[in-house]
Image 1 (cartoon, one colour):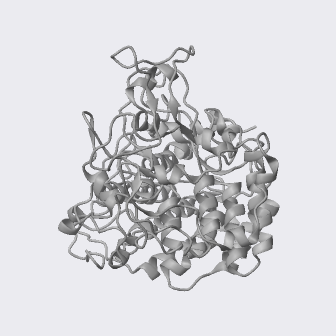
Image 2: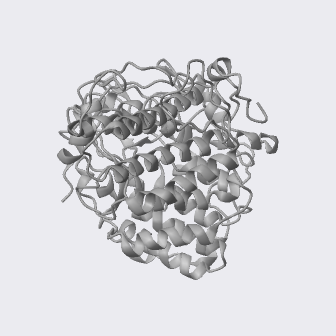
Length: 535
């Protein structure tokens, strides 16, 4: 069984260490370990590695991290202005796709990702100086693969970024900006080089760490999106990577979809690469508080009142089959009750609090508008942080990559068989026959009623019938909502800019928004950086 305590030995010792930004790579003083001034030994190895991995939590779920980038700019979720509460602000520009160069989420992600890169570079530098380290090259290659994953995310979000692999640099050093093609080639090369040095085990010794299967999943993602990154699809290459994961990794789908997201999900058989969290020892995700209304404190016996932010876009909620268990597994709606089953009443003592599948506008929503995401199990006494590990990659992801590649290569029947297998657990207790999906359905349009939406009314219906492989795009939404997938999927399917949803309007001239602007603060510090096209 996978034991989170083993992971903590690697991850906890570096908690709360904050790294430097990309353009501040010559700093020499660190929290507990100084690269130049402290004599390190092989016994310090875990402490050296820990900060490099800790950055993954920041990158994924800290404030303005990739979770927000991928979900708030998508057609699935929105963080509107909440009347009498707040929010809105730059979340509105994210939803409407009207951001400029001063985008806090771009600033945050650049910082988090390059902090991770810098921590990896520091760890590699320190380990290279050590004597008596068993399998030193294996350890270094693991870190290089971790850095490549961080660069994969930088490629996906910013495309044209500096490749920095050294830790000690001369005073005044300014990294040179690389092209997206150069970053792509770097990521691919680093992952392929590291692969033979990495463990192929799928057990507690590799939980939360980079092993061969994590590398193969990253390569699969790289190839899956190669048409976006390079203009040349690489379906065969992606297929080869996930076939190995599926056939030889020893993973299997959980019997229940929700088991991937329970608090004790480190025992999941489906997770390929997990980001470990613990509300005390390894914090970093405050999702229950970001989405739930204050009234839900009584439902989950939370330690404090939630902040009432993000909700599900009604047009997306309406796409679910009512027999699909994922609707209830992911979302909470309707009249609300306390943990003891008592109705939660409003201040008038007459009206029961109710989440409704309705929103007015991104510029102003009432506190109860929009269903709320509860995909990750919420335990009693949560104090603003959660202990659910994040399945960054899981077997269903590998299976759906395989299905998409087969679909695009012309084998819709084989793709449908895989999608059906993924769907079966979600209909087994309601209507098993509905789990079966046909190749024609995947090839056809989306059931999403695209178009701008105001106060419950779609004001200019665009629909989704014209979306190639729209049926498969729907399947990706139902399976992976809330897992920081959707932005990438919408771009790959060509509708990120060309479709409208909720308060976001279609604009074919906005294709440049497939990547984010280089942060202004970084442009000011590094004269080698040039702004991304369109900004």
